[in-house]
Length: 111
Image (tube, rainbow, N blue to C red; front, side, top):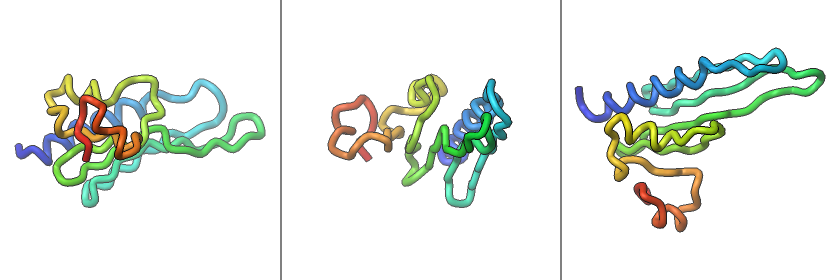
């Protein structure tokens, strides 16, 4: 299995794992978006809690230029740490939610 396919599998497994955690309040559907052609992966929460609309992305990961970009992490866990535990090199993980000038100060790739 080549690196890109391995990274896709890791990301999809993480997306599916976190999508299996259902919200404890409200009528909220947890949706996964896995676009393997363009390498965009997300978890969306859609629904209602009391009279309040719930809509938002809790996790967004892309694969660009053979690197895993964590664009948004609304979970309480470090997705980057989970990826490194799976064997992904820190040089292949970009914390896209940090400003470009900040990334150089992390343990991960700047871009």
